[in-house]
Length: 126
Image 1 (cartoon, rainbow, N blue to C red):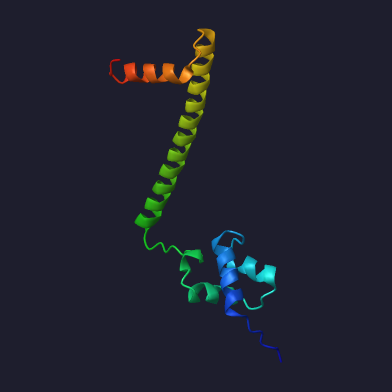
Image 2 (image 1 turned 90 degrees about the vertical axis):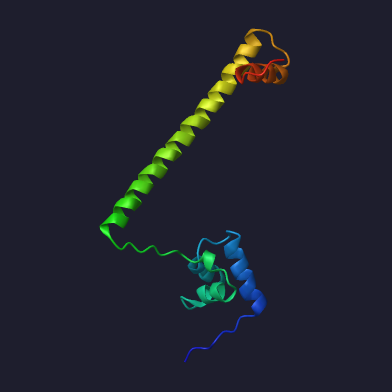
């Protein structure tokens, strides 16, 4: 017969807290790290302390339309991520070009010059 191990409330809270802070990716990982037996023990603690946001999410797909919509959304997300990456690269390059141009034309106060250029481009006058 197996012995039942009782864990203190503070220990349970500590384990749940560490999962919420990202020290452990899952309840199973926390169980292994602390040698907690029982596949649902830590999961029960997470539920007990109202941290169901830490539990894995289950997505139910009910129709072909849902599957198509999910595929379309994933494709859209990938396109948006690509656009964000391209914009970030473009921003870095524009800043580098600006610095090179300022150096080439002897602009010492780059911040003031940038403000002046931005004002002219936005239609404001100085």
